[in-house]
Length: 227
Image: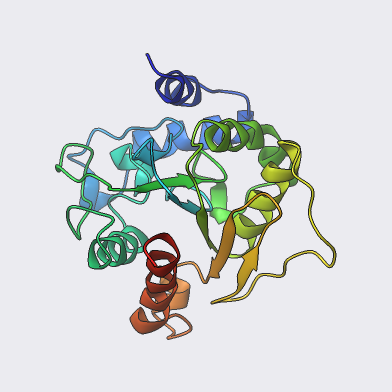
């Protein structure tokens, strides 16, 4: 097995955070009415995509009835609908929809991951849970040597990418990069970090994040990769 495959298996088997382990297993058993026929994944979620990717998209955590149900990051929820539609628009995905692990979706020159591998109660992970999970992100970044552009979906993902990079030995210039939608930061280790509001329903339903805004970030990422 490749290093990424070993990492994915290690992530899938993880039970290091008791609160998260209990919650994701309970959700997988109780389900919700519209998904009663599903056999929920109910385990931690590894990253997904092209091992030779130049673009890395980092989200916060799996959705309780999205990734925690389907077993693939940003799959089976409305945030994923926005993300894969944008990736498809700019040539990073073979299709615009992500419904389940066997739907045929493949990523080209793109890898998608999350800072926290388990769905958290009330979408509120603890600092300790992020600290416990961060080594998985560090190892993921180490095993993806071609990454030149990172799109961080939300401030937490933005900060977690910087923390993981520091843990890998990279030094940050001061003042530290600040998150904002459409923010662009060149890092000393050669990666361009782009900020985007997370395509959560809270942001998309209220108009805080529109499709043109979201597409603008990936248009920029595409231009950086293919000038």
